[in-house]
Length: 199
Image (cartoon, rainbow, N blue to C red; front, side):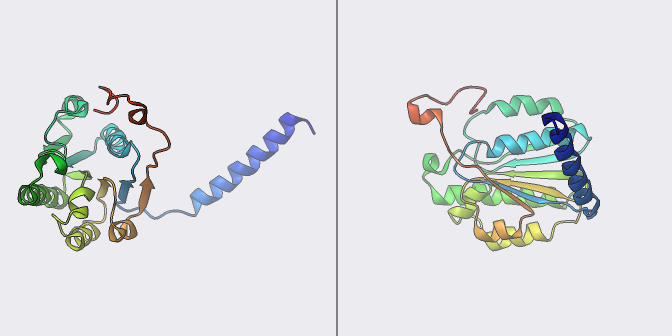
């Protein structure tokens, strides 16, 4: 048997296995996706899924819990999808910048009110709660309430939660969890955050 024949046989077997797996999965539901971990790419991955959703004509809600103190590049890019997107920047910047727990709690609670409105609005097929894990970690939002609300959302609604240190209760309730691991980062070599890459 030649190398080409062996390759063809392996790919035929792989195709049969994959088709069988796909045929046995017929359930459909709104998914809770969590992008967490210390590596770069959590919000970036969520934005990529948003673009995919726009391609299918989905209405998307995006609430950014932290990134309010600066203007990242995605803000300008997302304006191009204004007919399908509701984008609310609710934070005041990173918690180490405000250094005020009461202000951080008020900002988190206001963002959570907006988030719950989006979760309840049947127009949306996808809601992205960017950096929601930050107020959960610092206790400016109650994890139990957030997890319960997300678990009780309507059955066809997809939700993406991003941010480091996702609490175990959120991870347990999610359908898909991706942990971004920092293998190497230019910041460690003295390279500053780059426009169009980090922001």
